[in-house]
Amino acid sequence: MPLVRIDTLGPDTARLHTLGDAVHQALMDTLGIPPEDRFQILTAHDGKSSTLRHGAHLGIPHDDDIALIAVTLRAGRTTEQKQNLYRRITELAGALAGVEPRNVVITLYENTSPDWSFGHGEAQYVTPAV
Image (tube, rainbow, N blue to C red):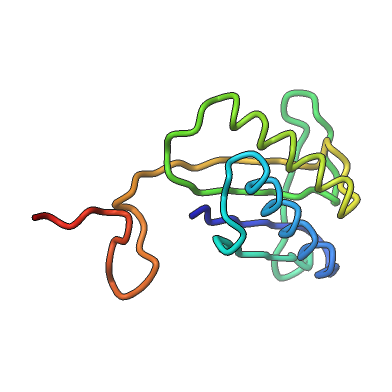
């Protein structure tokens, strides 16, 4: 179960939802995440009561069309799988939501099976003790 958080600047919620679709499609394409395994927090900051700040780290100039994408998932993916995910997210964000590749910033956070509960106060990924 990846948990995806996408933050953008501006009131375009349709674009934000399209970015959510793009990220989920990329997760399915590259990591085999099932279609129904979709948990996302989508936030459009208005620039007044909430905003995003960005710089030009590593010489990559970002502007107010930036999309900050954070994905939390269980550990175990290879570097190659992660790189494929970054490329696919960036490709789909551009094709579906018009985000320039330089404005797609992605961070992965990994954890382990006991770190997840999908409800009922249980850790569903943990095998019960016998």
